[in-house]
Amino acid sequence: MDSKIARCLLISKVLVADGIMTENERAFLNHYMDRLGLDDAEREQVVSLEGWDEAEPIVQAMSDEEKQAVLDAASNAALADGTLSPLELGAVRRIAEALGLV
Image (tube, rainbow, N blue to C red):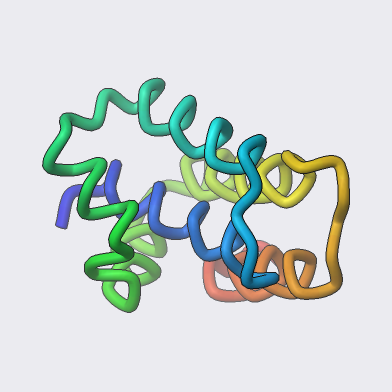
């Protein structure tokens, strides 16, 4: 799996943590995928959550700076709909722990 897809999958974990993906959250994910240059097939992989469980180890292998950027994006994703649910906050915390950033 490409590291760009892995990053997007971690972001999607936050966005779907509360069981609802709002239009603002969907727009956040689309913008993030645009920024990373994902093609249509890669976008479909992210949207269908294909490889979700494989994403963390790939991101764990990144530099500390890259991991911090993913965590920052995950934090922003949790706020994309203007509401920070406990489930979204928990997802961000789990990502931070998995990446060794806490």
